[in-house]
Image 1: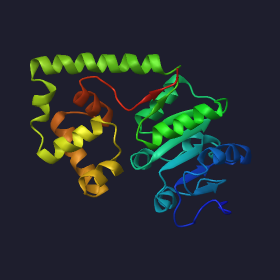
Image 2: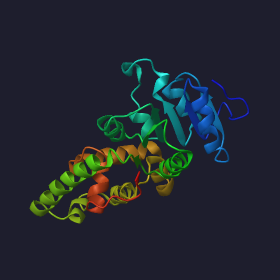
Image 3: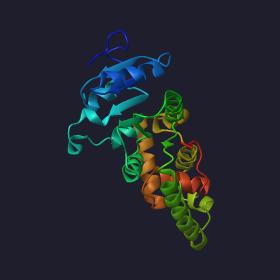
Length: 231
């Protein structure tokens, strides 16, 4: 760990994990003024990062020598904004990571202004999609929207679907539709993160949905909000 004067060992607003000093030193100025920064040359552990309770993390995939060494980031990505960095991502890889809750997949050739945009979008709960991945993402969303509309025609409208939820579940569903993270939903409703997760599990079960992306699409009738795409 390299904390220097950048962060407090018990708390950090931002975490950067990379064996590359050059990468770390490039991201640090972009985060300066946004809170304390904690630097790691090697992957610490999910528990250690959770203890720091950051709002934004940069994980360099070079921190792991082999793909199978990369930990399951799904739990962590539900709690904070994670940006993955690599030399390159295929479109399929980027979409796969985004599906797990990762907010952005960045390559080393992105300029500083683009990285600042990525930080701004992801810490507000949105996602950043590269211009290469956007067409396939939109194709998938259009396919889902068509299926959702077909389901709505045969069963009921989206509002009627949400009517089977409890009042608290409907509030959570609407906040998910606005792109809010579990942490922000918990704060808005004055409940714990654990309670939010329990409600989401119940919502997914009642509506026969697999994840929060599909819930957001249902709530918004296919209108995706709070997301940023690279054009």
